[in-house]
Length: 138
Image (tube, rainbow, N blue to C red; front, side, top):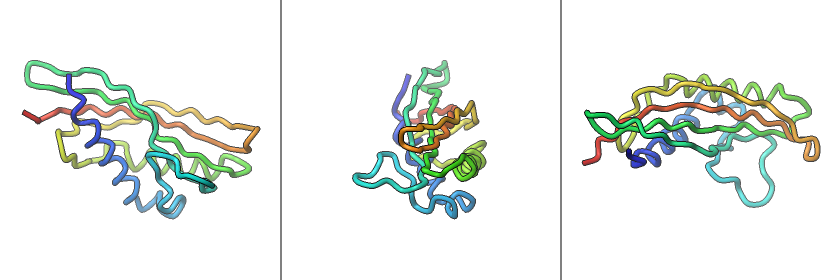
């Protein structure tokens, strides 16, 4: 197994979201791999946890990355949060991401969970994606 492509995949996902023409008008540059200190924006995207499984074979090292991208907002309803979540999904599904290590074989949507936190008047959609990568590091 190789986890060597993990950072490269995260960098590519982050760059793709930052450059996405449909997502940008909704959240601007408020895309984080770590929440900012202090007040958080009213609507933002956060790269979340991942689980990685070995998918190596006789031809080389590989892995399946199951990762979460969350859209979180303070909106009084889910409309803005769901619109941004749809843009995230549209931007990542079958994306042709260029990695600085390894190769992306596929990237697909797996599932989403929409929920609210009534204590903080927050709305959230957690989108889970599955990426299969090959590691070309010798």
